[in-house]
Length: 121
Image (tube, rainbow, N blue to C red; front, side):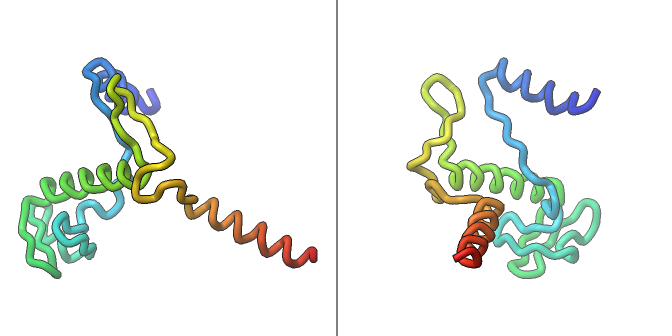
């Protein structure tokens, strides 16, 4: 039963020719969809979202859905993911805002490797 909803969603999306993205949910209810300001006070109630920075007011669930949508779009732009002509998601290594950018974890490993190499010399 583990991951049943995720598996079923992917199955139905595949049948419909749609893409599925896993987007991190933390702070989506506190982040403003207009200006990206994140603060617990932005969520005035279970129903109401009011941004303390730009004044954006919206239904809290609607605002969170817009934040998730924006994160999915940024994920696609950062990784260069595109929907090909045959309906399959592909990552183009030469495109996207990040191009061949290393992830934070990879950067950390490279930094540690560099320091270890310097110490050996």
